[in-house]
Structure formats: structure tokens, C-alpha cells
Length: 368
Image (tube, rainbow, N blue to C red; front, side, top):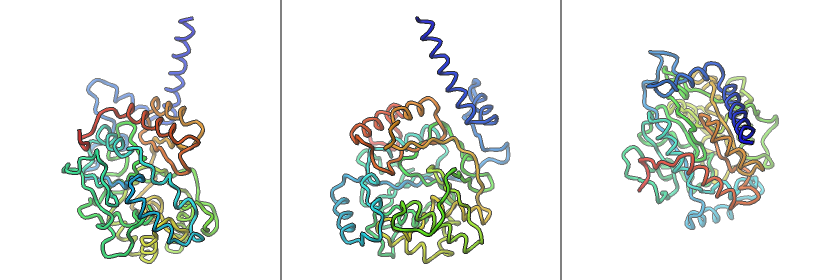
């Protein structure tokens, strides 16, 4: 009996190893094997050899909200009551958009564990600070919406598209930065070259999913409506527009490209920045528009990324979380886009337990 059980465990482990090898490909697998040698450094899968490494600072920007904060909820509810409901998808005010399970705490832990090369970190919020966050850490700065919306009347806003359209206005932000949502995590060591080339060009991570044909409507999920608007802008400007969407993973950004695009599409940036909830006329700047704009102007190219997306409302959540622990991709996302599932309390408990087990060591950004 012991032999049967032991053989079963060996076979399951072998299947997992084979699946990981297929995902990594020959070069990625070779890098993984080299990293296991005594004294080997963390893998730098995108570096390309001596002289091609990244030598510039890379910042990280997060957007974060605590949807349980009563003062923030009062501002949101008043704004939603004043909105024209016929112009918005009901998903624009879906409570799942603002659920907080301390994901930011664990995403920061993932940076410390797997990307020690990150320069500064900016956390963009609306008059909120997580109680566990060490806001005095010199590598981290809280950025209030009032700072990036200065000179506009776009706040208060509860629209991630609007907030994202203003991130490049953060004072002191480096030219090269990664934009993280707090539901994005690094699953194993990553190198700067996984996100940028040494000459400053950004990497893109296309999704197999595409933007549907046709104009945007209020019935469209906001992410698709924005994708359609992005495509129309790019087609009018360049005569072509890639149809693919991008992975919901850290977005490599060049601040100068954002500023250039804002000048090129000034009316569209301004309209989105003044939309308090997601609207069918929005553009989605870092998640779609800038990736394709950068590609079409020679500042970004597609690249590989070991990635897993988990829909927290899906029926196989427990199984997916177990697989994440064994496969450990470069990046994974635990997303609430469609709601918290049939049993919100169970989802909450499962996610918290998973993250605490995956990232048990507190980071320098936590108040102990």
C-alpha cells in the first residue's frame, strides 16, 4: 500500500514538472536548471547577455482602495446617486471592484522577495492609508488623488480608468515604471529584463483574447468598451490597431510615452479623467492604449511571461490556488472582476490563507 501511494505522489510530481517545463520552453527551462546550481544567481531570463542588461531605475506604482472605509463609501454612494444610470454599465459600481483583503500587503512582499531591484514604490489612494503600511519608509510614498488630479475637477473619482489616466503626473516618478494593481503578484524571482530591454524599450504581454468588433455600448463590460475606444483612436492615428488585449499583469510604462500620448489624445484623456465611474466613452490607458501606442511608435515589443489568472468567482478556486503553489509562475493575478463568488466569506478566507502561506515573511514596508 505504501508503494502505491508513493508511486502516485511521484507520478503527480512528474506531471507538474512536465507541465512547468512546457510553459517555460527550452530557454526558460535551461535558466531554471542553471538557477539550481550551487551559488547560482537569481535567473535573469530576459537579459540577453553582458551589455544588454537594464541599467536604469524602475519604479512601481500601485492603485489601492479600502472599500470598507465609511467616509470613502459615503463619497462613492453620493457620486453614484448623482450619476446618470442609463449611461453606465451596472458593473461600474460593482462592490467587488473595491474589496480589500490586504492584497497590497502581500503584493509588496512579493516585490521584496522576487524583485529586489525595484527602485521606489508609489501607492495612489483617496485619503486612505492601510493601517499596517509604514508610510515613513524612504522607498515608499503615498500619493493622494488630489496630487495627480491637481488643476482639474475630476475628484472625487471612483473610476480606475480615470485614476490610471493621471498616474504619469506623479511627482518624482521615474521614466521607467511598472503599474501594478494590488491583485497582481510576483510568484518567483523576476529580472528587470523581464519587463524592459536594456535600451529602454518596454515589453508587452498580449493576451489570447481580443477586443470584439463594433462600437462601445452601455451594455459592454467597461473593460471592453474602453478597448473598443482605444482601437478606434489608434486606427484613426496610425491606420491600424492590434486587436489583442493584454494580460492583467504588471504593465511596463515609459513616462515620456504617456505624456506624449496624452498630448496626442488630449480630449480623450481629459474626458476619461472627468468620468467619476467607468463609462462607455472611457479609454483604458496603461492596460491597453499605451501598450499598443508604444508598439506602433517603436517603444515596445511583445515578450513572454509565465502567467496565471485566477477568477475568484470561479468554481475551481481551491484547485487553482493549489496549482499556483506548485507551479509558481513569474506573475499571477487573483481577480474579483465578476464578483466574489457564491460564498464571499469562503473566498475571503481562502485568499487570505493562500497569500499568508505563499508570502509568510513581512516586508520592510510593514509596521511590525
